Amino acid sequence: KEKKAAPLTKEELGRATWTLLHSIAAQMAIISRLYPCKECADHFKEVLKANPVQAGSQAEFSQWLCHVHNVVNRSLGKVIFPCQRVNARWGKLDCKDRSCDLEGTVDIK
Ligand code: FAD
Image 1 (spheres, rainbow, N blue to C red):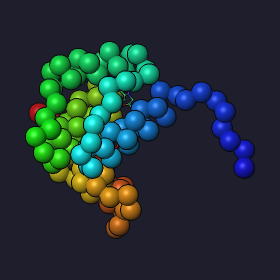
Image 2 (image 1 turned 180 degrees about the horizontal axis):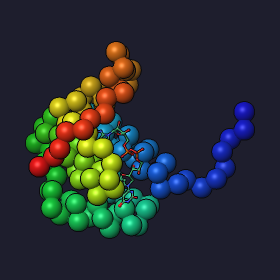
Image 3 (image 1 turned 180 degrees about the vertical axis):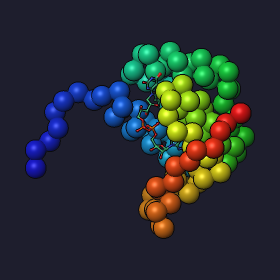
């Protein structure tokens, strides 16, 4: 099988990083601050300033990350994810009953 050799796109990088971040949040570990897309990192710094990390518990951390991901989603004109479904989406590596397909349309504050 031929392997893809082209550089990572902004979309691929973002998708992979959100996957890592949400997986980490679901397992309660540490988020890395290094991010190779400068435009994204600069924007995210502002997002973090307005939304300081809340990690008093794994559940709180997951909800906080869902919220800041939605802030980025909104700035990019993407669908807002319903945060009450974050454990169904990211809590397990296997996805029973199509729980990994969940995407939502609810508004955030
Ligand atoms: P992604 O946003 O990558 O999401 C992946 C999956 O996560 C979705 O398919 C969905 O199932 C799930 N999901 C979506 N929202 C949530 C949520 N709120 N909570 C839980 N799960 C959710 N791109 C830019 O063009 N400009 C930027 O400034 C920028 N800043 C970024 C900052 C950071 C920290 C990161 C990690 C990425 C940034 N990106 C930015 C990339 C962008 O956010 C997306 O990752 C990229 O556009 C691919 O989008 P996607 O539609 O595949 O879904």
